[in-house]
Image (cartoon, rainbow over all chains, first blue to last red; front, side, top):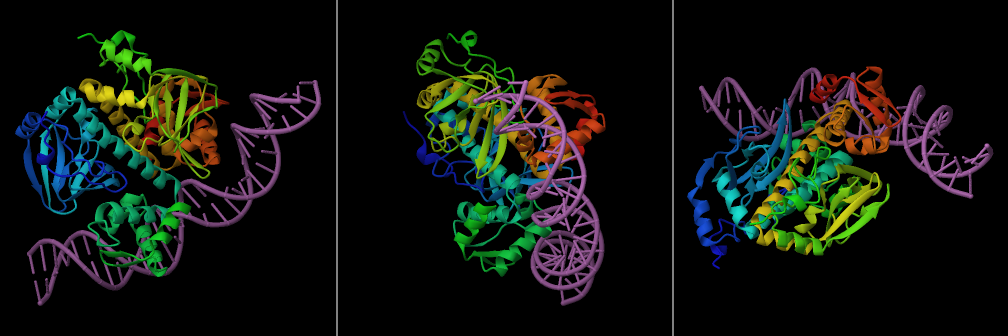
Length: 238
Length: 238
DNA sequence: CATTTGAAATGATATGAATCAATAAAAAAA
DNA sequence: TTTTTTTATTGATTCATATCATTTCAAATG
């Protein structure tokens, strides 16, 4: 059989704690060429500017999204409180839960930088899963990886205190998104707070603590991790 | 083709917030008779007494578990802090993440009452998923339902305060596990606390608040919900 | 049945973290 | 550029919730 390894739109890569696809797993590699063609016939490309909303929690979901280029955040909203589920880089899928549950989006998504999306018809994806077990298994793998990440974050946010939670997120951003100890954040202090379930003021204060202790260096959106081990210790001790 | 609707070991039913299988979805209905036979050849039945540990987080996972009879809790542990992920009734699967991630258990499981388990070889399940897209899709549905439940709980525990969190859990237990407004709890106050991410003392105090306000009636493990609407309002206002 | 053990309940106290208020800085818009 | 708006920062205060200490109760166990 002829698989489409080469035609896959990109390698999937990790997102913060809750990544959307396992590292090094090309997303559609299990599809046959003709299946990929079927999928692509339903494909629409969309472009979003930084700050634009890609989908709204609760809205009817007839599509799932593949992030072709850019970075987005997925978040839960209710009244005025937001909780960011994940920072999601290019190569990942958005809205997989809608395949199974209620045909609505279970979270909102917003572009953190200019972002290009492939939008796929959810029923086409469903049919491909039904007819191709390898593809469906691949989807299961992606969702399972997301789940494990979510367990981790669930534990962090409910069991650790502020310093531990922020340490977790800084390590995660460095490791999974920027893949460097020295990077330019694409998210605000408020986002950092919504990632860690604390107030913006607390996030800022703890950032300052880390800076005062020479664990990180930071000015504006530029962040440099000076002492990874100390951060890991803070993460471990909660 | 000949499906096995009738041979399925049971209907899956919901678990607290994070249920393991969507209601009314017989778990293995998409398997062909011969596939079901293959699966059952790898099947081992195990019995656990109340309080016994079924699997340990971090341990090597060569099997997934189907709860034939009983109720269990799945929980994350780290040092001395536990977080209960779900109360899981008969008809659900345990350890689905291990199919995709690391071949280890990502949470521990303990029997809350005497429980019978079917243990299936993980590789057999994997192979069946690869060769049967309908079955794999069914698995995806189960995992996706779990995921949506977890989002809900994630939001509850990180954004609401104690009263809202406990209201959520009481409503959920009533609705998903006991399917009644009047039931005998199979979990301790400590479990209630570990479900809601609060101290045991706080859980007890809030239970008392609810009792004093005539929202619930409670003595020992017997709980009766008197005012569902008030509970829902408390849940909504956080 | 008495005894040990663990679970539940309650009050007093300490503390982590949110909220409020105000200012400073940066980014966007005019 | 100047103005407006948004984001970041800092300090003072309040509040929710954990922790500690003790007692009561229930359930195993010898």
